[in-house]
Image 1 (tube, rainbow, N blue to C red):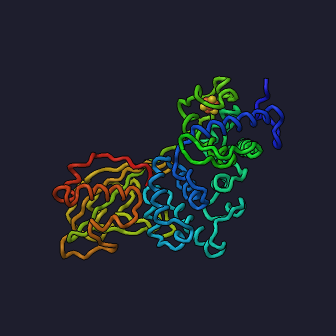
Image 2: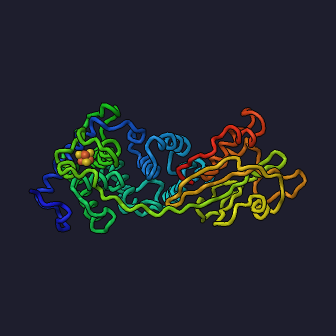
Image 3: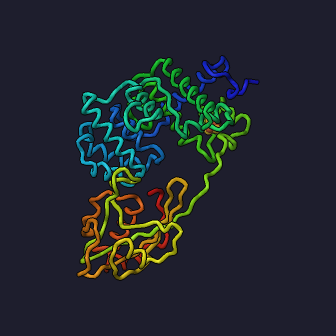
Length: 410
Ligand code: SF4
């Protein structure tokens, strides 16, 4: 009976696991050549375009990313275009993906490469890793996919595939286990690099020439995790590596990777105000350096356990009285361990009242701005009930919108 790999010493893998690595790498390359999905970033070897796709794909589903990536590449097709773009435009192109520091880091890196790096995307792993916002996963992905270098990668999908394939039951985030997983990912991509490339072939699904073996191997691990070796109900019967899979052979698939304890959920309750005066609406831009920095939002506050007294809270937030109605609707959204309930009120200020500080815009002009996700949802609801939607925007909204709207992240 082969020794469980989690007990192996660090360093090179011993012969049995090494043979297993060879079998897995070959099977994955064969499978990927026939089963790879046709994704737009698989039709390019441009490191800039691949960098953008890999950054967008972190914690976001492929189908969500496709239109974002296509729009980004249309608007900012080169490093130079990204470096020179107004930050507002960069945020607008990222709007809705969340994790806005990633967009800011992309631009920071592009500006550095244009100013100091000769305007070219680096092709050495350490240089890629040194870019703002680029970690070991992203550097490995870019170098393998764009330059066919044997640089490993490890994301949630790959961790799940490797822990199951090798029967690793320790916590994947534990340092020694994580090192072992990186080692396995490295062995796989280095083995793929030693196999003669199958030049000239095209993937039946993608219809584009096959990339190099390192690119394919890494992408096949992620593809297997996304399509076959899924968190729940993996399709083991159809899996190209089931004959070598320790979890499948020992009927432990459901137990690997070891489930992590769920973080304690904290509930928060917030209010937002759609403030209207003389047909214009009040919005404010968050300061740079804060969460969602430079994004726009409607005036809002966190109740922090205080009683819900919307009129008094509106007065303390805005310094004026007005006609308050609502809540017009309720949004619920999650940010990490926080579950946030956001109640939205409509506040109409008298024509002659002093206007609170902020930016006042017509409803039709607001979509030009990049909003934090929950506030973009508010805007979409306003627009849905706005001109052409029948009647006063906010009143229409209260009739037409379901009372609770889920938003994946702020
Ligand atoms: Fe995952 Fe099942 Fe394939 Fe093993 S056999 S790698 S558990 S899909």
